[in-house]
Length: 266
Ligand code: A3P
Image (cartoon, rainbow, N blue to C red; front, top):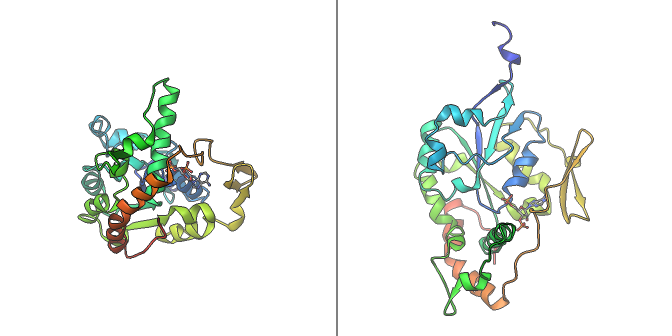
């Protein structure tokens, strides 16, 4: 009815999407953005633009996965699988060429070990065996370029597909290591990018000594990410890690040039 639309809670398409990187800190970024009163987030990963079986369900299905929002609120979803999925950029562009994209990056060597550790934990839960990381990463002592988790760490290759469609200014890059060290400055930058009023405050965060990470405080609620976030990494020999770092040097340089920023990666 007329006059009530300003207060009607509806499910709306996102105005911003966290597209990756897998194990970059995507959950932390989403939950921290959710501290903002004008932001509502999809609680689970939607996997719409990367998974054909979901994409076939259409835009009404996608919208139905979103939280209720008021007209002036921003909906945000995160699916780290989008970043590396070849059809995702064109599908998002087709839905909304003005979509704001957030990409949280992390040292791609650390990311790979974290990625392996996640898969290992999933296998353990399913009572399935899994090879040691070194067996997947190295073949006859050399880096195996076919290892999927390594390919996901070639950030420039994936970013190039997004930049074919989206202008650089429409992709905000969050420094995942900086977010771990001190979340507030990264959240301030994200607020600016998202054109949100500065509402997130330094005292929304406190360092939890037991967790070893920052946790969130808001309206008397205390929230840390679950134990799958910030867990010990699977072992990898120093020699193998150094080979990985050396292998990633050139891909990292290309990425730095592409984004116009250098990161302190191995
Ligand atoms: P590790 O588990 O390798 O340490 P994602 O949510 O994309 O899967 O990313 C998980 C990573 O988020 C974790 O990787 C962790 O380092 C990082 N992270 C960043 N801020 C965090 C926080 N405040 N609490 C827990 N993990 C955090």
